[in-house]
Length: 350
Length: 100
Image (cartoon, rainbow over all chains, first blue to last red; front, side):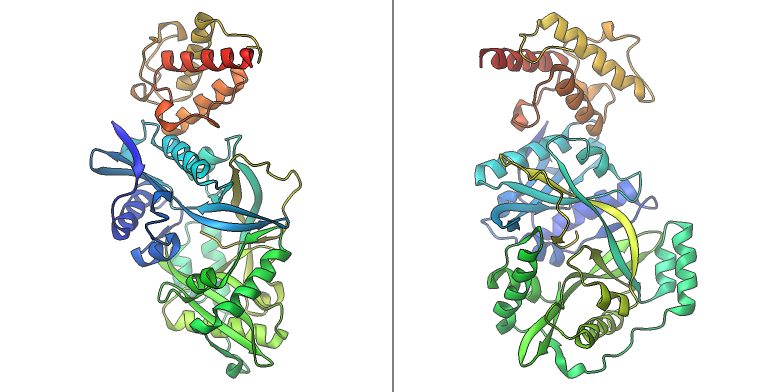
């Protein structure tokens, strides 16, 4: 008999469980992420007050499913709303014939109601038909597709990315790009770029929150959230750029192991703020990050392709656009979801 | 299709649920039943070879067929796992709707 309750293991066990499930389901069929305990501790903010948002399914003492969510405050068309974002949904394939997924989903929804959280946001991977998320989430009436999103990608080691790719066309493209894509160029003015320091949190929160408010949907940033998102080293790295003596831009990225035909490590750019920077400094910011990623063994840089991700600095950094492979979804909970389309998102990819 | 405001007859609901389940099982590789009529009332849905996604499909098809919302308001522990439990759930919601 499967019991649904709050996850009671540690973060290391959670990472191992999720990685094991995804490998068992998708190895060789579609790419997927392999999370470290450090990464999940950063992501899920594993504090006692949020532990109940990691909903789990147990068969006796055996963990057979998990559906985590992280509480988050959002700006939605000028309103501020308490909600959450979710990812890492994993169910042991041996329990496929039991309604574990739906029970986890219902329990997570119940907990959202209990906590007064009005929204649960997340991604459904639609790039490969084998992905079960699209069959599970996108058919439900209570799930609203917000918009399809693609990515920006910049190979740092095209040969490794080619070995990783599961699609022949991607492998061919990556082999060809090897001929034209050199290593990232050095910044012209490296003095303007430096690592994030705890004292930068308030200024960075202002930058992030201003971008978020300009978007249709984004996180509500304060110094505490910025400090965690930007400063949780070594799970994440942040560089800031100064202009006229002020922190005026930032790039925040994290290493994430991806498994395809072969494993690679991606440098995932979560947030990039360049609005207040001269174009040259914005390009320098990206170049500095790319050089750092490459030096640390990352094979690929990627960023979500949303309207709030600056086009020109990424284009100058030799990023290319990949068609939409994700559907960003919202699950309103006792809340009227806006009928008009949300065009500008200021969110990160997971 | 059942009217949204008419209380449902349990036998009619049960028969329609059998048909919905049979239609779902027929899409799979091995349907254990020859016809909807032979599906027992107390059949455990997890024992007839359906996956968690099939289970969701079944729930959605029940919602559509009877024009009721179940998943939006049900507690995980109340999730029906047998055909007869689904029938009770449907009839109870239809009755509740009519009274409201």
